Image (tube, rainbow, N blue to C red; front, side, top):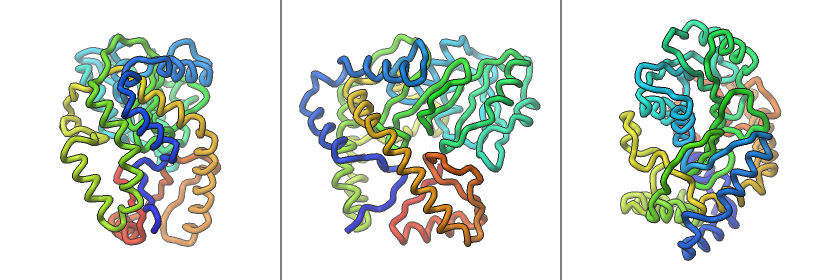
Length: 333
């Protein structure tokens, strides 16, 4: 028996995370308020050498909070790359502003600075720069363009815990498939007064690492997949993206403060950040070597802790089906 390679189902999960979540399930007095949320914020302040950081319940909550704190409103335009998660333009829509998509560069899968300049109008207020899969965007060129047009620069660090922020603001994600995971969670360089999520929502997130201990080993036999489906159907586990978000609407849960229980999980994962990054770099080297003879284009960037190892192919669906037969569940991000 072996666990499938499932990039969307807690790939960072360690036994200590599951045991910690199990322990917290029986300590509801720690769920909402506690010292760990402040500890997590302080960790980011020290790591990034910034003065202000606020923990929220997701990366899109962090993005939304930053946009609101910058005074983004109806009629404003926000530039972002077209190759991104649905959550990123949704947070813009929730402010009443309009997302304007910018093309990407083939090598980095990040925003093309040349195309960025063509999309700026008098209504443009900010640029959201995504470091796709952990590959750094061309910040120097983007910052130059933004400075010339007096635009705010917000870094989307959902795919990487980077050590330095070049823009005016940044947000991070601690989702179940991110660089570190507390199932849900995010961090913003911003200040915003928010409520806490419900106890049931916190329960859903704490149950996820515990349930994953059973789901992953039996996923290939169909039992784990069935258990996951049942738990989600009964709403004991939440989905990473809500149905409302798929049509651009804002679920009531966003934005909200990060519950203390999830801050505890995030702090536990941060202890392993260096290990996670080394492992990602090592796995990427294996892919570099094993895939070089295939008719696919491999990433030109080397030595990076990829959140996803991106390849370009004209047979994506065929490759996805082949990988699934081998127990590798490729994502559709």
